[in-house]
Length: 269
Image 1 (cartoon, rainbow, N blue to C red):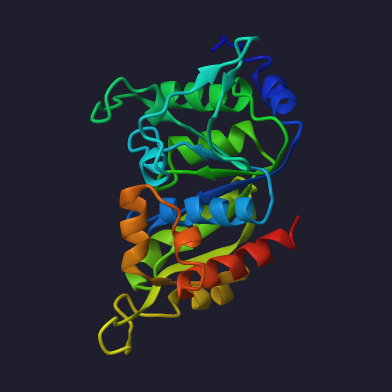
Image 2 (image 1 turned 30 degrees about the vertical axis):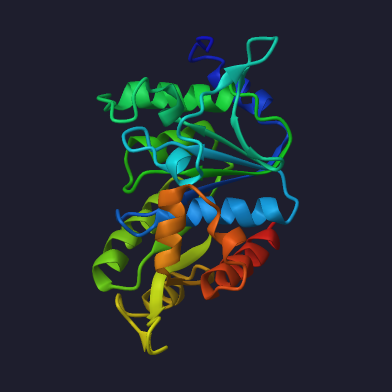
């Protein structure tokens, strides 16, 4: 990847992303809320609707999307002009991740902030993204280097906040909302993940992590509520196997919830 000076890095990013219609960062102040699962499945639903989707994994220290999408053994290639090409998941979906640059899956990335900002800059300016309806960016939890770098490099980005219903998650997610507002990210809304669970044996609805916390937060913080996604063990299994949950289980409650969320997001285009 070519080196870009500080004076023209923004111009290079703008030029490279000129054919990208929407840039949406998926963030959360809390780890373990299923943010990568939500980001990848939203991308799969959008791609299934015929949208051209790019998925950018900026979790530099723990990139999981290649494993979740079944392409962890792939590597990014260059074209005849030495432009780096994303790894293609399907005709409508392509992925870029730090995991594709590591010699070994278990290798750690021990970097401080400036190096992380540099690689994110190069993901935005040097990757051959082409024409996209959406570039969905999966950020690590918190309000640190990666989401801040993304927001500074692409100020027109929007954000989706992911939370689980319990109060501890809500407390951390409030910090993400404050972060987004302070750096002028456009907030598309809140998704409540792991919202309720249907027992496969008796059919009873169980609130393992409570329910309704995300919707209440959206009212309190005056942010749109995009929807609630129920807990489904098959989502975990699909991610571990690298298969598309929404394609394998099209009639599940979680898939139907994801499709409704995508419909709401699409209205904001």
